[in-house]
Image (cartoon, helix red, strand yellow):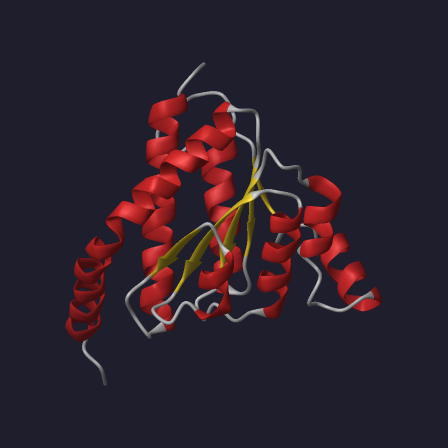
Length: 188
């Protein structure tokens, strides 16, 4: 049986390596703030655990992270079961997020695209749809980055090959972004 301390050591080593990404994480945060200040919305998409992260981050922004404040415009494209299932049934899963971008987003908005591998076809298609609308796109991925890291405006490639470590870093980054955004835009 693997000891918890081994897992904890691996997590801590990853977070130490993540410091190398601080500049792009902070720059992306500033872009998120600007998007919201200019009346844009934040859209998020991902699969599996990354879909859960999308919902988590959007909830922190719409409801509250640490402060009681006005709602912030964030939408997880992973949550509408009728759209997800109808689109997947009628058109396939590869365009399930790009179709929502087509319907809901404008050039004032920003897409946060999350894929641990950077190779998820539906995430790539969502990024392409966002870019075609002139949206800012931020990617959260793993060490390799995949195609996703080449398509986005800002790519945060978590320095790990382990999916669990990558996802742990993504939610850490998401929480930090929520705190910074909330601090900058706190209005009652």
